Structures are given as structure tokens and as C-alpha cells.
Length: 304
Image (cartoon, rainbow, N blue to C red; front, side, top):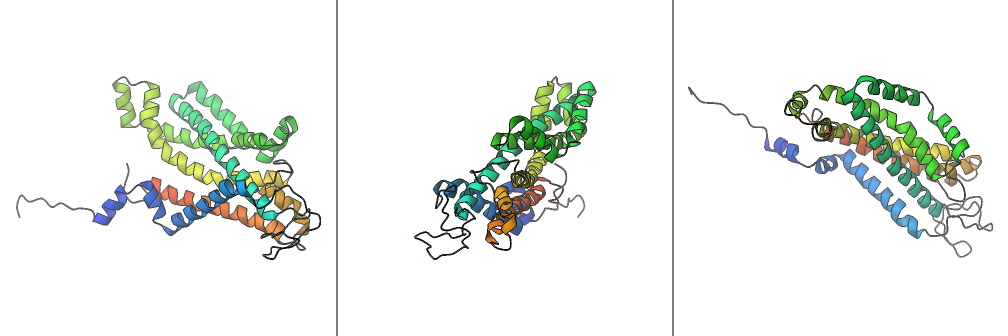
């Protein structure tokens, strides 16, 4: 009919999917649901069950060394995941090692994110000599291998949990700074930033109210994908003897102590290795799905 207007509406399912919270969209896919469930189990095991371990993880029983996983009591004790070469219960050591790996990752990533976010926003927005100086610092930092940096820090400060956190934060923040700077360089020229400057908004207000909300989804995805990298690096440093020191157990340390017994006692290196794999898999599944959830272009909804 003349004068009539055709109105096309998106399907109700598409509209409801666009309005759904990010958490619901994250859990609606098999990968997101599996990753969240697996990570939940690992977090409960690491931070919950580690405070109620079956045995003292440092207690030695030289009468019951290198015992395979079993449900049958041996000398009055049951070791579900077996014992190591000193008779220590592997399940108890595994839970404590898992807690340390998660603790390191959940400490390093927020610190790296905060430092890299601050540097990237300041350099990208202000530019000038400050941008040049800080970016050259980032380039210098990225040129130093993490292992070499760890050796230098250990030589000066010694080994331990704070030293591992320091090494991984120093190695991790430049990646965030580079990505954030690139985002801010594009955002500062957008119309909303120009309009905010035209009405007299300060630089801090523009960064906090206009730039940060647009950068934050990218940073969250980077942080989720950075978590498994931190866990692997922590395990590698402990494997090489540069991380957590005995008698405190860690997953990498457990693998390193059992590397000569892989054929005689397969469970000693295999169980902590599988645990590291599961943790990395859980974070990777969530990180990959979170990228799809937080990026509107990947959801088919167009630009924000």
C-alpha cells in the first residue's frame, strides 16, 4: 500500500540472545559449559580440598615408597593416587600443588593486567615523548626471554612464591600494554572522545568513562588466555628448580622429581602432568568462548 512502511524485526531468539547476560551466553555453548564446569571442579579441589588433604603432603613413609594408585589399604593407609619415592601421598601433594598454581595465576594476571592497562592507556592517549619512552621500555622487556629473566631474579632475590610472581608479572605486562595502546590510539580519535573534549571533559574522565569501557572487553579476553600461559610457566620454572622449593609441593616440581621414574612409576609424573593439562584446557575453553561473547562482531550484532 502507498504510504505504508515495512518494518523488519529480528527473530525473538536473536533479540533475546543479544539481551542475555555474558555469563549466560558463555554457558550456552558446550565449550563454555565444559570449561566452566572443569574450572569449577579444579578451583574447589585446589582451594577447598587442599585445606583437608588426606595426609600431610610433606610427611614421608619410607616403608611405603613408590606405591601405585590403589583402593586397598597398605600398612593401614590408602593412597588413591599412590606414593612417591619418599612415601609421600601424591593426592595430598597434588591438591597443594594445584592450589599454588591457581594462586600464582590468579595473582599474576590481575597485576599484569593492571600495569599493562595503565601504561597502554597513558601512552596511547597522551603520545609524545612519554609514549616513545614507555614503548621502548616495552620493546626492551619483550626482548628478554622469560627463563633468562627468572634466572636473574632468582640469582638476586632467591627462590619462592613472591619471586615467581614478580618474574611472571614483569614478563606479562608488556603484552597488555601493546594491545591496549593500539586500541586507545584508535579510540581517542573517535567522535565520542572528540565530543567529550569539546564540552570540557578532563583527560582522566575521558579515559575512565569513554575509553576504558571500550578497552575492557579486549583486556578481559587477554587475561583469560594469559592464565594458562602463567600456569605453564610456573610449572616450567618449578620443574627447573627455579620456582617453589621443597618441601612445599608444586605440579612442575612433582614432574621434575619423577622424570627418572617415568617407566618404573608412571603415575608420579603422569598425574600432575594431566592436572596441568586440565587446568590449561579449562582456561583455554573459557577464554576462547569469552572472546566470542564479548566481541559483538563475532556475535553478528554489528559494531557497538
